[in-house]
Structure formats: C-alpha cells, structure tokens
Length: 144
Image 1 (cartoon, rainbow, N blue to C red):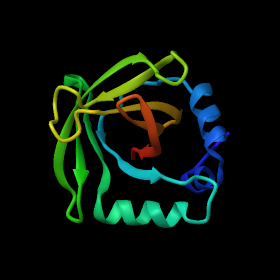
Image 2: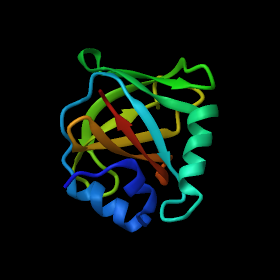
Image 3: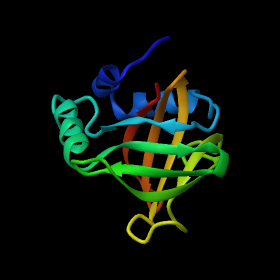
C-alpha cells in the first residue's frame, strides 16, 4: 500500500497510531529530508497547520547515519540548528523497535523532546514527537 501526506492529514490519530505500530523501523536514514508536521489529523485544519509550520518553524532534518546524528532545518531560511542523537531502541508506543531521535544530551532547547520514526515505504518515514513522555504530534520525513 502506498501512502502519502495528504492521506495522513485525513486519518484519525488512532489510524496513524495503528499505521505506526504496523511499520518496521527500517534503516537509519542518511541525508536531507523534507518534513511535514501532522497536527490535528482528521480535521480540515491539518494541511494548513502543516504549511504554517513548514514556512515558519521546521522544514526537515539532515541525517548523518554514519555518525548517528541529525540536525534540524528550522525557520523561514532553513537554518541548521538543534542536533539529535540517532539510534534504534524500543518505541514508547508499543515497545517494538523504532529509530529514536534523541535531543536529551545534544540540545538545551529541545532536551525534553524525543522523536520516533518508522519506515512506511522507501524514502518515507512516519514520526511521533514526545515532550517528556507525552505524545504531542506526528510528522513525516521524505527523502529523495
């Protein structure tokens, strides 16, 4: 089954959670990705919220798989900032393997954030963002 961002916008949170739990971790990605925030899934506002976040807050992540690191592209100009450690570990959602994007030791600003990603299809990852242990939102990462 092929899935895209517009389909995720239309899904309920429980459907997105199910998609995440049925996905495999896949390989740790390498290189630049385009990010899309999935906020308020299943509502008409979800695509518009994503556009605002992409324009003003967050554009994606640049992965360095060999070194187990990434850096986010943030702001209107896509400035590289906010580093995370990248490794595989059990997901907080279902205790199955996922790729963890851990900011706890690399960023003062984002130290309470933990992202988890899993591969939905080649070059397309679904992510969950946590603040402490509370799930806040979903996102996608697309690699060329």
